[in-house]
Image 1 (cartoon, rainbow, N blue to C red):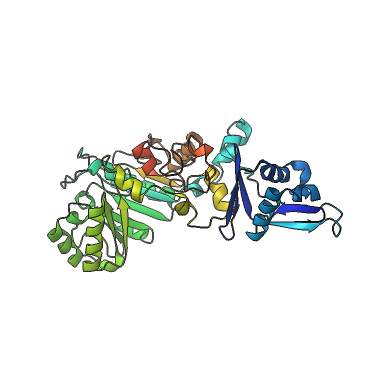
Image 2 (cartoon, rainbow, N blue to C red):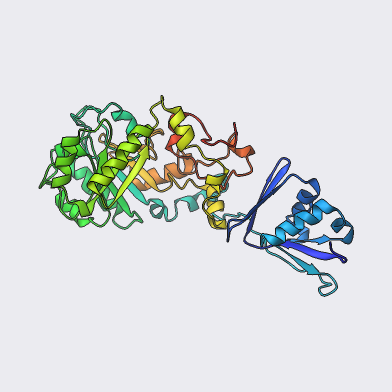
Length: 410
């Protein structure tokens, strides 16, 4: 234990989460964390956040004589989260900057003031990062969960209403995003090979070929239709028609193709492993699918526990982002064959490209927040000490109706 008074502070890369009777200290450089319910320790850390203390508190000899407090301070030092400075060597109280989120362009703050709300619209097009376009809604596959897959992952879907985006509408769309920050454009259907003007839009797709990704069901592939320069995303669901898949795999450009396996149970996962061993794809992803009847599969494989949450070291920037923006949805727009535009396939429509510009639709989403700024600020997440360390809400929360897919909060 100490024999003199010290200045105590946390390092500037330590994030602190305060809850009702507990705090979390998280080292954003190495992922070390420290939790405590000790009132005296919570009081000590709280002192650092009082404006008058400027990130530094006095740790007296009397406080150090308290075994639990001293043990807490030792843990902070061992985990490289804080410092002790000898008052005899540093009689003048030092200053330590502590990380606090303070956005100058916070949407909720700006839209309260009409004069400031104009700032929301400044550089609006730079917020758009990804565009998903459904060319048509026609398909003859009749997959069991045709209208559900697309609500959980990028996937084709069919209503068979014969709705299609016109070539002119697509050209207008691409003109609008030409100088935006869009880094990926996903092209889907229905069955994109049944889009009546597929040959007419080839030059348009080729002019944006670096960011175009074409999604389709493995049984719908047609050779010599899509330009050879485009990235192909092949959806594989179950039960699998093995011969059809094998035929497509023999015909397709494998170097430009990523397989997307959609699974709903352990048996299908094992089948995917066997397919990977047999066909040896260079690029593939596995997407768990919630059918409404596979809760046990989701609890075992999708629900998070503490070890999962802390498996990756987050930066201060990422944690602050989780407080304001949804990393799963932010920057994405979905355009349906009838022109309807959404920020997620699970949210209400923002408008229609036949009447609204992309710029106005982005602005509307920034204000109305159907998805982009959906964060963990409702029960039970807002009572959890890992609230913003945890990944942002995803489509799974939408489709399950459960706000926290974890084993931590009931």
